[in-house]
Length: 307
Image 1 (cartoon, rainbow, N blue to C red):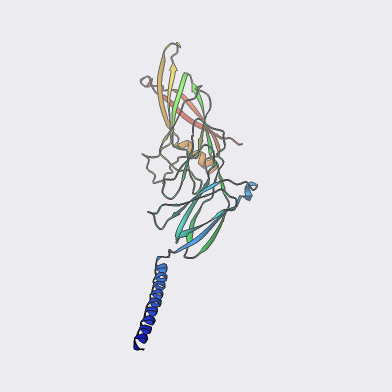
Image 2 (cartoon, helix red, strand yellow):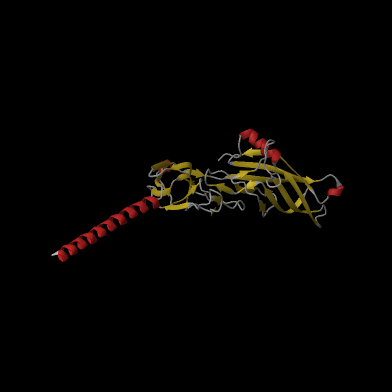
């Protein structure tokens, strides 16, 4: 009888130990889940296309956590009209979104906290970019938060710069040039120009034909600007093939002029660079015989062209 009783106690002890083990495992699992649970919230982005007659475009979005600069952006692609919901770690985010079916653009996502769109400035294209952005700053995601952002897409358009050449007492056979300080990039956070260093080269088929450029902006340095003048400048440089008076020998002549003054006058008149602006460029020989290989370039007139 005592043996049976002892075996009964042992059986009860084993069951008790088993139950305690299960309880311990559950407590440990719950504790681990509590420790490992990532603090995060949900963000819903709703683009409001009503302004564009209900039309919509497939979009690509980048969420940048501005609190953690070393973290790669969270990328979301949305092909619906209703927007999307994304779970994100807590933090303050910048949203940069654009439509992926835009025309004649290349996109650079390697920039700091933004995406940049590049386009070809010359030869000029009349094809619309059809570029829309859905962007926002300071989206604060708290733990377990549910945030909804309704954003009206912004259509981004470029500007047109025209150069009209007038050659005084010169028989110009060919013309090629460089325009420095005209930008062909767009910051998709705000739709403004990205001031990239670089030159735009051009060579019209006919020397005196109007030359057109698609630009996002022109560089202008006010007197109180801290911009690096070695990096940014607005200069028009020309190389011409010119026949002499006997129409037998061709000479190469060069010249350049700063656009700062004329851009300053344009901004003073319009408070900005107009969407379509024409500059009349006068080119003539230097009076000094020692400067036979140089030309004098002057821009005194500008005109806004209304569409």
